[in-house]
Image (cartoon, rainbow, N blue to C red; front, side):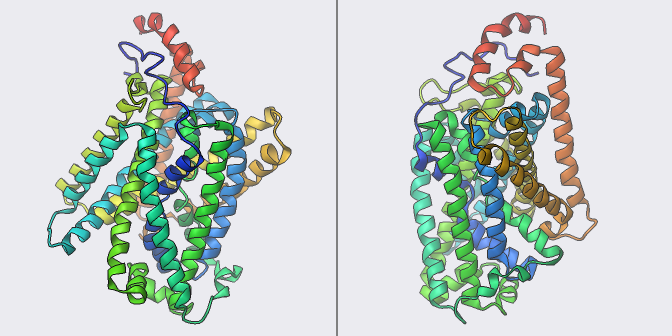
Length: 496
């Protein structure tokens, strides 16, 4: 099933080189995190679910955890360059079989995260068009965006970066404007109690920390573009660490500003009563048109995030195809643009099928597609990050490779402890994250699904080890594996 009739050539198995600088990598990672979506939706949901005002402190704690992880993660990226970042790092750190298991979880999680955004995107576009007197169903709007994203996904990577740069600049400007307005119209000054440790407590607080992690998902993506980056040893680390810092600042300031505008005593009730609280405040303070502008910006934010996750997913599939861990045709790139066209079109086909299925079955695009699927994908990605943190520790335990004690030992170990704690909280309080009763089927089913994917992936890795040792030997080695396999596979293919 995973054997090609003819392997991709060396040219077809290599991504574009020296295309992306630090700012371009930042555009991909920041847009994948969807700052405006997190603030306008996630932060308000967190106030409502947690019933507490410690959201800014929660984001600070998670930012420190991910910063510790990023220190070791980006240090390891200096020694390993692979479009399947988590997959390659786990394969080279812990072992090839765990690496393949991680690959199955990674591909599924990123694909699900990207697809989930079409639910929110379709609904937001439907609302914006309704203001213009145009009545389109959500799935028509989603398919229009799907077509645009699918087209951009096959273009040169630097073109995608330029599109994201424009959308991201406007998005962050609007966020900062809304936050400044909230502080300027503070009900009782800046509420310092929001940063008090006493505001974090109980089961809901644990769920809140877990949900805060999903707001940062995408920070890890610069390593996915390492092969296409300029000065890889520096740009990837700079972009990753900068992403964590920028997102932390935006999330802390914005969530704190909402508390300031509404008042510490009333923000929870306001969030429960009005899911669009961020835009409502903007309309009241700056004028009604700004609420509409905020909604339009949410549309561009989700579109940009869908494009960013599409590119990340395509590169994971490309990396697996190039190493023959997945069908080898996924490892083909365009001779003209060096974009992973086969993997991109595959992701487009899968997402299109899901949109059509949701529309045909009449399922809720907001709850069942966006919220359930994105939250579930977040659990899978959090498990990957925690596993990758372990891989960093193991990798440098064998050899520090000239790296500092802090970057290769201390920070990675601290990150493992912190991330495993957050993962434990996420699984324990997953029902709270989904907004369902404890003991419901879905909170139990999702972790079992990811565990099953990991077991199947490990089984496939074990099969490759025994039946296709040449492919197994190249796991996690990126372009070098593709060149070795291209030369050595023909004789083996004939016998399979």
